[in-house]
Every structure is written in structure tokens, then in C-alpha cells.
Image: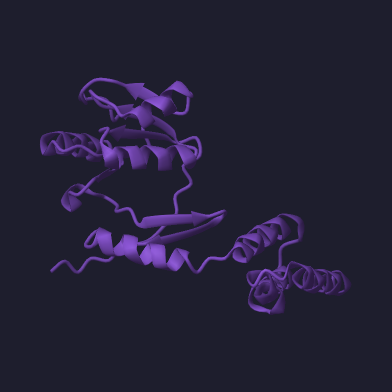
Length: 213
């Protein structure tokens, strides 16, 4: 049994060049996720789905309707392979690794430099569950269960703290304030949807912050 443990990260792919080889159901999902992350996506596949073609028509990704060819990986920051042809997956992985570019090959763990968690989103909140590539179906089941626990109030609280982080000066006092908002009564009220009472707590905390500066 494998004893490796994945190191979880959240990549910021805005403006990064990403290659996606393949156009099946998995590629559809990968392509949509990458576009939503702001990546500059190039899809290489001899036959493409309607959803990927629509994204191409909208100018949100580049479409190359042909088989993968040596040299396609060059110039990209990240590579994904989602094809049923193992020989293609191996060829792409070999080229990517020779260039020092990380690659993920769907359903072929030994060709992956990284694995992908099962992801769900509620505004800025991302719930990601990984089984280190061993049980994707279980990861999806747990992700759905955890995402059900994220209420609209949690989304509002995340956006509020993000807004405050941009406007309040850095330091221990800001850290204390944000922690208090999340863990204290204001956060509990907002999570329950009691917005008026929550905002009263927020205003009080901000006034206290101003007095201590």
C-alpha cells in the first residue's frame, strides 16, 4: 500500500498558460474549472465536446482540433491529460517532465506530479477533499456533505473579512479583530442569517479597533 501523502495547495492560475490534452467528460470538467480560475487554456484533441467548443467560441480558451504532437507542452506552466489512450498520456507526461513542467494524467496516478481534490464552491469559500488519488468517489461524497454545511452567512462573512483585510492596516490588532469577527458572536449571528444583529457587532468591533490605534 502506498504511504505517500499529498501536500495540499490552492494554485493561482490567473494568466498562466495551461495545456489540456483530451476532450471527454473529464476534460470538460477540467476545462471549465481552469477557465473559471482565469488560466489561459489550450485544448488539444481531435474531437471536442460542445461545451469546450462553446468556450472556444466565446474566446475563453484556445482550441486545437488535432491529435497531440511532440512540442505541444512547450511554453505551458501546467499540463493536464484526460484521454482514454494511455500511450498519449505517457507521451505527454514524458515531454512535460523532461521540461520540468508538472503534469496530471486522469486515472493514472503513476503519471501524476499532483492530484486533484474534489472541489465545491460557495462564493470565495472552497471546499476541497482529497484521498491522495486513492478514492475519488469517496472524496466527492464527502465534499458534498461538507459543502452542505456552508451557509449563505458564511459566504458573507468571508467576503466581509476579505474586504476588511484590504482596508485595515496590517498587524496583530487586525489579526485579533478578524479572528474575533469569525469566531465570536458576529460570526455566529451572520452564519444564522441574523444580519442586522451581526452588523451591529461588526460596527462595534470596528469602533473598538479605531480607538486602539
